[in-house]
Length: 103
Image 1 (cartoon, one colour):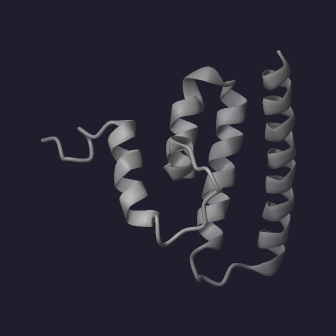
Image 2 (cartoon, rainbow, N blue to C red; image 1 turned 45 degrees about the vertical axis):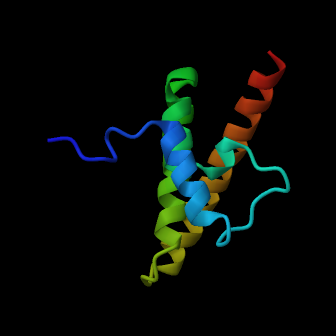
């Protein structure tokens, strides 16, 4: 059984988010449709166009970001170590996309 969300295109999702978030979030001065998509959606769109290891790095960044947004007490040592790993992943992804842009 399909739900309404499964039948929704990326553009439909953008328009729905625009209506919902125009007053609630801080956007760039001239937002594009891309700005209204969530990180998970952006990663999903990029997946066929990026190396597999970059996809996994982006997904780990997303999961870590989500973990931090929930008020659960995380062990400080684990969180510090994981944050350092995520910072390395971010640097790796930035380099990948900068090199892709110049290719």
